[in-house]
Length: 383
Image (cartoon, rainbow, N blue to C red; front, side):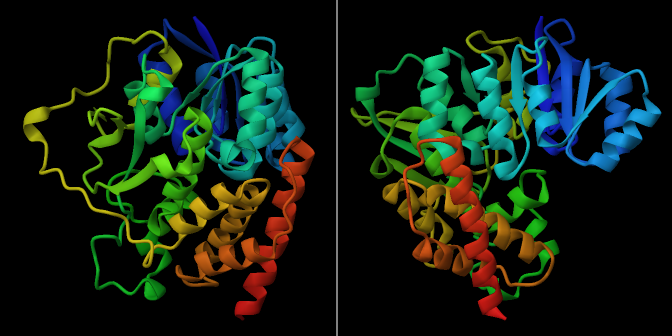
């Protein structure tokens, strides 16, 4: 029985993780939960899964939950979320908190010797060298939940690093890639949130629309698999059937295919190094659509270029890239800027950033704060 801490339990990945637990009650058990402020949802989860501890980022939400469940220990704030991640009853942390807020709990959980099922790509984007170094020193396991990196992990099982020619990250292209006539500076928030393949939260849906999601995944893949940027490529695959590919030095390509359901990747990450018999819907080869592949368009979607540049520049540039993107996406979701303003804000912040080594948590968080300030200044200059 593996005991889990689900961070971000009311989000899409958190809900999918709880669904996997429902399918495999003999294998997995909820030890702790952490969420933001959705009191009604976390209340229902507490009744169903009976966690030892619950943490809510919002103090008022935590107070309300404590009133409704006075016998339950409820923690609050970032410290409370770290407490949920590091709880003594926890074996594995499912890290599904969106954005930079997920970094500190993952860092503390690794320090506490917990294995990590990582759905928060920002953790490795901001502090990849720091996190992966800590993973090695603590001797814990870190398994990717992102479908693309999960696919790469499966394709690379047993492969020698010297045999890897290139990693191919597939991208759906989002809602606008195949609509060449669509003017991206005129799209609405609702249109950008309407992802053609996956059901995701608002932030990652906008990242998919700008292809920044794929840029962040390039940085994540670099840290997970130790492959330099010139051997990581993006291919747009609108059907989202092949989740990623590995090209080996002899020209062979291995592709991972599965149903378009995040529970498949979650199950793999939670069971590795074993494989669990699937209780998910079967993958039907005979109903597959025609599979198509396209090169990305960095002119129309410049966020991918910015991500590659930040990775190559190193130091704290990736942390600033991530911070500026979070600020820009927030302004877009509130209707204050256009979709095409997002890469403008990010590029402005990167150009004005004064980098320093990302060799400590404090250093990374300082760069995150600076990136947010630079992005707000770039936003103000647009007005």
